[in-house]
Image (cartoon, rainbow, N blue to C red; front, side, top):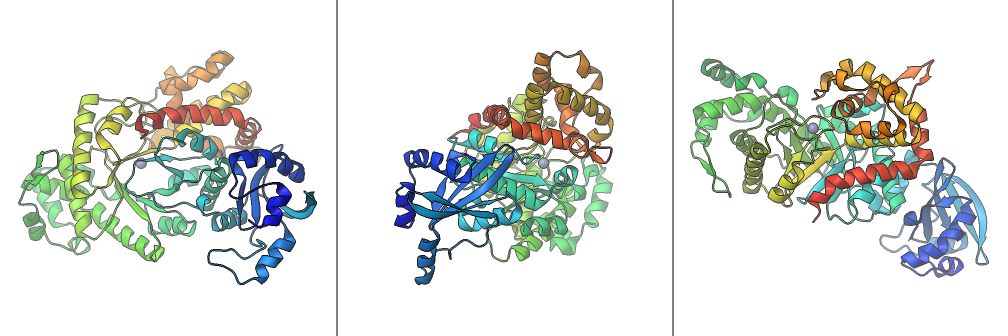
Length: 535
Ligand code: ZN
C-alpha cells in the first residue's frame, strides 16, 4: 500500500479488523453505498470493497491516481500488478478523503469484473484442495455463497463454493462462467481467504469438460454412469462370459487373460479385511464397470490435455447407478484406473441404502457403517483418496458415522438443499409467492421426478391453501413436500407466464431484498451438515 493512500484513509497495512471498522463509514460515504465490512481489502495501492444500494451491488475500487502513476513509472517488482487497474470496468468519479483526491470506480458484478478480481485478488479464485476433508456447496440460484462461507468458517473443512453439474446448469439456465463468478463475488463479499474449490460436477462428455475448463474450474467429476452395465448384477454366467469377451479391450489396454491373471491374488486392506475377486466376482465387476472405466480414462486424458499442466483434481462418480458398489467392485475400479494412468482425488461409490434427494438416509445404518468402513479402507490402501458422498444433503443420520470413519478421506456434496432453504426463506418472507411455488411444484412433480432418485407421494403433500403462515415454514421439513420442491427447481426457475419468468425474478428479488433472512436460513441448515465433520 502506498503511504499516501493509507494516510489519506487513516489506515496502516495490512488492514486490521479495527482499521476496516474505521474506514467503512468513509468508504460508504465515498461510494454512497452500504459497505460489506468483510469485503474490504487493500492490495497493490488499491482498496477493494463491495457496496450495495438497494438491490444494486457493486464492486468498488478506490485509488490515488498520482500515486499509481508514480508506481507505474518505477521498474515493477515481482508480483506487482501494473497500475492503475484497467481490466476492471465501472463508472469512475472523484472523492476527497483526508485531503487527497482519490478515484473511486463502481462496477457491476459481471464476468469481466469477476475475472479481473480473480487476477488481482487470488483468494477469490478457486484452487485444488488436496486430500483433506471437503464440503461441496452447490448454489443453484447464485445467491448462497455468503451463507455457505458463514456455515463453513471455523470448521477446518475445505470448501467447494462453485459446484454445479451441466444438468443443473441446463435446468437453471446458467453457464459455467456464471457459477464461477457468483462464487468469486460471494467469497469476496464474505472475506473468505482460505483456499476453496470449484467442482464441475457430473461431467459426461468432452464438451462438458471443455466448457468448464474454460471457466476456470479446478475439480472435475466424471460421471461414466451411462457406460455402467447394470444388467451385470443379475446376468447369468454365460451372459457374463459373453459380455466380458466383448469389452473394449483395446481402449482398456489389456486383454481378457491378462486381466484375469492380474486378480489372481487376494488384496489385504488396512482393516485386515481380505478382498478376493474370484472368477465370478471379477467377471461381474469387469462387465459392470469395464466400459465406464474406458470412458473415464478417455475423459481424464482429454482433461489433462485441456488443462495443459495447470493443476486440477479428478473425481470418478458412479453414485447414480442402479445397484450399490461392492467393496470388490471398488477395488477393481481403482486398480484399473491406476493401470490406465488416471490420478484421482476422490471417488463416489453408490452406497448401500437410499440416498434420495434432500431427505435423510433411508436404510440400515449398521449396513451403511460396515460398507462405508470398507470403502474407506480401500481408499487408504490404494490412495489415499477421498470417498465422495453425493446427494449428501440432509443425510443427518450418517454424518457422525462417516466423519468418525473417514478422517480426511471424505468429500460431502450438497446442492439442492440450499435451494430448498432459499424456498423456506421465501415462506418466511412472502407467503403468497411460496404458496404459488408449492402449487406449481405439486403440478410438475410427476414429470420432473423422472431423472431424480425420489419417492415422494403427492397425496401426502398438503394443499398450499390449507396451511397457515407458520406451517408454511415448517412444511419444508415434511419428507414428501421437500422432495417435490427439490426436483422441481429447474421448472420453477425457468417457468414462463406471458413471455416473462413466472417465478424467477420475484424469487431472486425477494431473496436479495431480504438477504439477511436468506443467508441466516441457509447458514443454519448447512451448519448442521458441516458440524459433524468439523476438525
Ligand atoms: Zn452425484
